[in-house]
Length: 121
Image: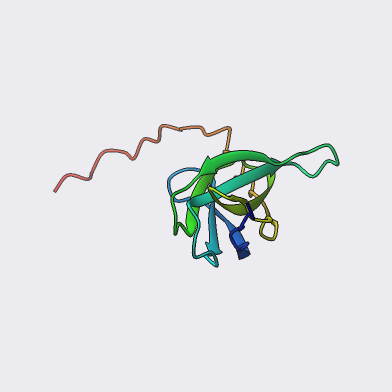
């Protein structure tokens, strides 16, 4: 039996967000017409030993996903379409480094100030 594979997606985009929690908004173009869904893979870090791990399977026609990430982390994503016949080749890889939030201020002090007694009228 000949396998018919779904078409790969292109133009995967990863954008950091601070809306509710630190995370990454992923979006891609749905080029497949016969997919059962999409496999989202993530790689943490830039080391040669870092590997892609499946983090989510979506339904058909999905074009977005939001993932959690840690400040200072560099993450890379790719997406594949799948159906009963198999899995497409991966999309392009999209990488983003999550910005680190600024350090909190320290050393806040309070000084009591006496304004004095108002003048009598």
